Length: 467
Image (cartoon, rainbow, N blue to C red; front, side):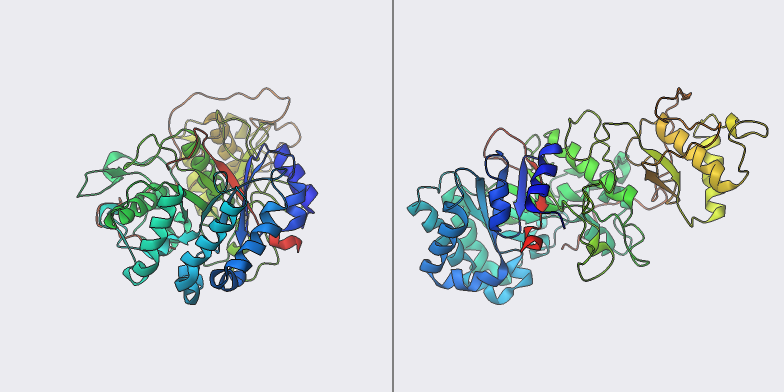
């Protein structure tokens, strides 16, 4: 993995101004010094029991991992543990004590106003989460959640929530349409409607966040903001994870970033942005578990982007397509019949100019469905200005940064070439275009307000890899 200085160089190059660390690695915090990057440091779960049982242990942790680094390193929050109630339930009874001890140490150091204390929760602690207005926290944890929320309220902190529409989609057994999970546009008839509030939901992310707001209001807490401390989509999976693809990861994260930066808010709190951290900065090829567990990163270890985000108009953040060098090609191993059907659509209803594919024309050779569909897919993708979801074709297409032009066959979008793009408004069929609509019967099975006027899009950095 890259060194801390290499990580910080990448953060600066990509204009990433907010990061969350899964620990408080000294080398990483020193590398972040004098950069202005806002940092959430974390108390690892394995240290939680000691801190929750000893005020002195908490004070020592704050002295060593926070006081020693501020103000040079811009630490803005401490995440105490990670998904403790679901991942380490035996530590639940001391969770609030741990938060209070950490906060007391910040008060003693006169840092409590600039550094907030909270703990990230899995959305799985929210039960009956659709419709959102019926959501409530798992009542088993009421003895923890009630004092925890009161602590957050009294200290002006926020609820940290991890939101993963990918897992919601995977666990829904086909109930959740892929488009609904990916923030893709939905017709009004396919929006999920909360029958109690008549609020319309066009994506899983907003539904989960609002479920958390309603769950807090069920406990008579209505003024605690939510910050999403993890969200993302894997770019690769095994045979049981067919929707963990580069295109879907690109679509989800691009749409998520655009959604947050546009201050869209949620149906319950429109116009109030939900600050969000994307999981994660780097792929982890040595991480145990399924293929998808290793492929949540925006970048490979060498600093190369795993994919180029579609962020036109959203500013220069992350691996944005600033070079305009992305292409849509046929996916390796794609079914030939599906490729032919997609090719027919692109050259027909998709209104792509496929004349270069005719016999005697520059892109006729090689004369096979893979080469011809690649040209047609890319022509459509470029014509649609690389909009999210326009390189899918029912799962047989994918995005690449390698120019597929060859010989005299110059593909639309190729650097330094003038390619003809035919105007049109037709959209390619999504990978889930035939799925049923998501109505108010959808049940979500789950894995903001902001303190300042700024909207946060940050990334999660697994600094533990540097130990």
